Length: 151
Image (cartoon, rainbow, N blue to C red):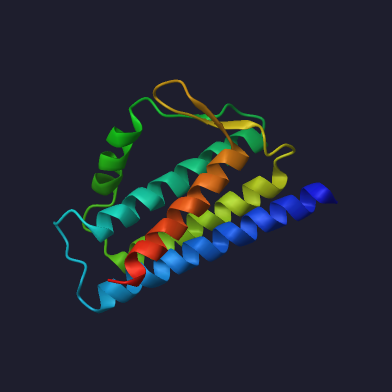
Protein backbone atom coordinates (compact mmCIF):
# COMPACT_ATOMS: atom_id res chain seq x y z
CA UNK A 1 0.00 0.00 0.00
CA UNK A 2 2.79 2.45 0.88
CA UNK A 3 4.51 1.72 -2.42
CA UNK A 4 1.29 2.51 -4.30
CA UNK A 5 0.89 5.76 -2.38
CA UNK A 6 4.49 6.65 -3.19
CA UNK A 7 4.08 5.99 -6.90
CA UNK A 8 0.74 7.80 -6.90
CA UNK A 9 2.34 10.86 -5.30
CA UNK A 10 5.30 10.75 -7.71
CA UNK A 11 3.08 10.43 -10.76
CA UNK A 12 0.69 13.15 -9.60
CA UNK A 13 3.62 15.49 -8.96
CA UNK A 14 5.18 14.75 -12.34
CA UNK A 15 1.90 15.17 -14.21
CA UNK A 16 1.21 18.50 -12.50
CA UNK A 17 4.71 19.80 -13.23
CA UNK A 18 4.62 18.73 -16.89
CA UNK A 19 1.20 20.32 -17.38
CA UNK A 20 2.28 23.53 -15.64
CA UNK A 21 5.38 23.74 -17.83
CA UNK A 22 3.46 22.97 -21.02
CA UNK A 23 0.84 25.56 -20.15
CA UNK A 24 3.51 28.27 -20.11
CA UNK A 25 5.33 27.00 -23.21
CA UNK A 26 2.00 26.91 -25.08
CA UNK A 27 1.03 30.38 -23.87
CA UNK A 28 4.33 31.84 -25.06
CA UNK A 29 3.91 30.08 -28.40
CA UNK A 30 0.40 31.46 -28.80
CA UNK A 31 1.66 34.96 -27.93
CA UNK A 32 4.39 34.69 -30.57
CA UNK A 33 7.16 34.84 -27.97
CA UNK A 34 8.75 31.56 -29.05
CA UNK A 35 10.47 31.68 -32.41
CA UNK A 36 11.80 28.81 -34.47
CA UNK A 37 15.53 28.79 -35.14
CA UNK A 38 16.58 30.75 -32.05
CA UNK A 39 17.97 29.10 -28.91
CA UNK A 40 15.52 29.79 -26.15
CA UNK A 41 12.32 28.52 -24.59
CA UNK A 42 11.45 26.08 -27.39
CA UNK A 43 14.85 24.45 -27.08
CA UNK A 44 14.33 24.07 -23.34
CA UNK A 45 11.04 22.32 -24.13
CA UNK A 46 12.93 20.03 -26.54
CA UNK A 47 15.35 19.11 -23.74
CA UNK A 48 12.51 18.44 -21.27
CA UNK A 49 10.75 16.32 -23.88
CA UNK A 50 13.86 14.24 -24.62
CA UNK A 51 14.66 13.54 -20.96
CA UNK A 52 11.04 12.58 -20.34
CA UNK A 53 11.17 10.19 -23.33
CA UNK A 54 14.54 8.75 -22.27
CA UNK A 55 13.28 8.17 -18.74
CA UNK A 56 10.14 6.50 -20.08
CA UNK A 57 12.31 4.30 -22.33
CA UNK A 58 14.54 3.32 -19.40
CA UNK A 59 11.67 2.53 -17.04
CA UNK A 60 9.85 0.57 -19.76
CA UNK A 61 12.98 -1.48 -20.47
CA UNK A 62 13.68 -2.32 -16.83
CA UNK A 63 10.01 -2.99 -16.03
CA UNK A 64 9.94 -5.57 -18.83
CA UNK A 65 13.13 -7.26 -17.62
CA UNK A 66 15.58 -5.46 -19.89
CA UNK A 67 18.64 -3.33 -19.28
CA UNK A 68 18.57 0.34 -18.27
CA UNK A 69 18.62 2.97 -21.03
CA UNK A 70 22.24 3.86 -21.74
CA UNK A 71 23.31 7.28 -22.94
CA UNK A 72 26.64 7.25 -24.77
CA UNK A 73 27.24 11.01 -24.83
CA UNK A 74 27.41 13.70 -22.17
CA UNK A 75 24.19 15.16 -20.82
CA UNK A 76 25.05 18.49 -22.46
CA UNK A 77 25.51 16.77 -25.81
CA UNK A 78 22.17 15.01 -25.40
CA UNK A 79 20.51 18.35 -24.65
CA UNK A 80 21.87 19.69 -27.95
CA UNK A 81 20.83 16.59 -29.86
CA UNK A 82 17.34 16.83 -28.35
CA UNK A 83 16.73 20.01 -30.32
CA UNK A 84 17.83 18.46 -33.61
CA UNK A 85 15.66 15.39 -33.12
CA UNK A 86 12.50 17.49 -33.30
CA UNK A 87 13.64 20.09 -35.83
CA UNK A 88 10.74 21.71 -37.61
CA UNK A 89 8.17 20.68 -35.02
CA UNK A 90 6.15 23.39 -33.33
CA UNK A 91 5.33 23.79 -29.65
CA UNK A 92 1.85 22.21 -29.91
CA UNK A 93 3.39 19.06 -31.45
CA UNK A 94 6.13 18.99 -28.82
CA UNK A 95 3.56 19.41 -26.05
CA UNK A 96 1.59 16.43 -27.37
CA UNK A 97 4.78 14.35 -27.42
CA UNK A 98 5.65 15.42 -23.87
CA UNK A 99 2.21 14.38 -22.62
CA UNK A 100 2.55 11.08 -24.45
CA UNK A 101 6.00 10.45 -22.95
CA UNK A 102 4.79 11.33 -19.45
CA UNK A 103 1.87 8.91 -19.80
CA UNK A 104 4.23 6.14 -21.02
CA UNK A 105 6.53 6.87 -18.10
CA UNK A 106 3.65 6.56 -15.63
CA UNK A 107 2.39 3.30 -17.13
CA UNK A 108 5.88 1.79 -16.98
CA UNK A 109 6.60 3.11 -13.47
CA UNK A 110 3.45 1.44 -12.18
CA UNK A 111 4.75 -1.89 -13.56
CA UNK A 112 8.19 -1.44 -12.01
CA UNK A 113 8.61 -3.48 -8.84
CA UNK A 114 11.19 -1.11 -7.31
CA UNK A 115 11.49 2.64 -7.94
CA UNK A 116 15.08 2.38 -6.71
CA UNK A 117 16.01 0.21 -9.71
CA UNK A 118 18.57 1.74 -12.08
CA UNK A 119 16.80 2.80 -15.28
CA UNK A 120 19.23 5.29 -16.85
CA UNK A 121 23.01 5.18 -17.26
CA UNK A 122 24.64 8.46 -18.29
CA UNK A 123 27.63 8.83 -20.60
CA UNK A 124 29.92 9.33 -17.59
CA UNK A 125 28.70 6.07 -16.05
CA UNK A 126 26.42 7.67 -13.46
CA UNK A 127 23.42 5.46 -12.76
CA UNK A 128 20.01 6.92 -11.94
CA UNK A 129 17.09 5.11 -10.35
CA UNK A 130 13.53 5.55 -11.53
CA UNK A 131 12.86 7.60 -8.39
CA UNK A 132 15.82 9.89 -9.07
CA UNK A 133 14.76 10.39 -12.69
CA UNK A 134 11.13 11.10 -11.79
CA UNK A 135 12.15 13.54 -9.05
CA UNK A 136 14.58 15.32 -11.40
CA UNK A 137 11.99 15.59 -14.18
CA UNK A 138 9.44 16.98 -11.74
CA UNK A 139 11.97 19.58 -10.54
CA UNK A 140 12.98 20.51 -14.10
CA UNK A 141 9.41 20.90 -15.35
CA UNK A 142 8.56 22.95 -12.25
CA UNK A 143 11.64 25.13 -12.83
CA UNK A 144 10.55 25.73 -16.43
CA UNK A 145 7.05 26.68 -15.30
CA UNK A 146 8.42 29.07 -12.68
CA UNK A 147 10.87 30.65 -15.14
CA UNK A 148 8.25 31.13 -17.84
CA UNK A 149 5.54 32.42 -15.53
CA UNK A 150 6.90 35.94 -15.61
CA UNK A 151 7.72 36.03 -19.33
